[in-house]
Image 1 (cartoon, rainbow, N blue to C red):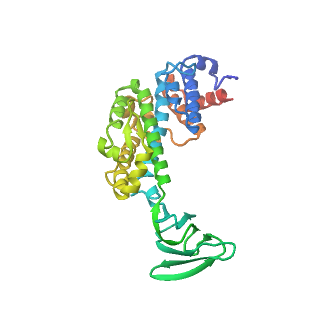
Image 2: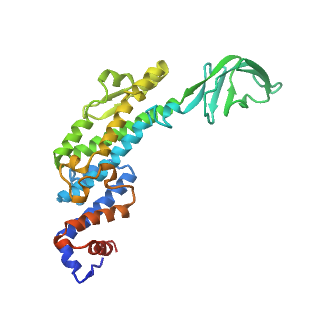
Image 3: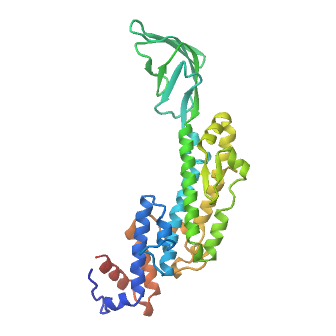
Length: 344
């Protein structure tokens, strides 16, 4: 890696001055944080903030603060997104993604391909298809009954984008519902995002009183223990949120309306957590870490500190902050030139 002179000032001298050296380390940490986040590597936080033995860890408070802010921003955004997916006031939430179910799967099972709105009807099976005769069944919808025959017991329905598999004679109601698997998966995502956020805060709690305040607020209860337990949530001995999938499925099957309200209602668990994440993203960096590493970052909210996932764009933001802190007000062009040398 070559380091040339820029504007008559020795880049070698700048590099060894300590300022550029810290900047270069910071860039490497930012790259590592983004790469690790892209693959969902949880140990990234403890590694970069020096809570594990690693040669990559730095003693520079500036490096640790930037690494913490980048990781915290990513985790809080993930928490907001996961929580909103369970908030039934939010567009596209899992409670609005309908599917079809059969009240008696011994008579017929149904598989939904897609469903944009509710669609209920009744199927009456007179006989199943055999080698010698077709299946005979009727569909009653909106008070009107239509008789059908089929050479197969697997039928692509005309009145719904769904496939019906006849199993036996009798009558079954086809009803609109939600996919429990989607809700369970969304709950797992929210639990994971929340736990990652708390891990990041715990790893950075020595960076200042602001982080400790964030840890205290984010770890505050999102619902009382009884409510959490009703939807399969609880805290383990380490303070991590955990999900009992069996209990959640039972709650959805036995009292869907109440379960939906407890999770995604106006005062629901996911709603509360999503609002908490949004509040955090709107807070200034200075309130989170106590002090800012540069004047340009003091009033910026966490959500815009390191915007986007483009590593190159983040580097230029970091270079801007760095150039403002250099002695003798060295211009940005020197810093950008230094960066290009280092990356080359």
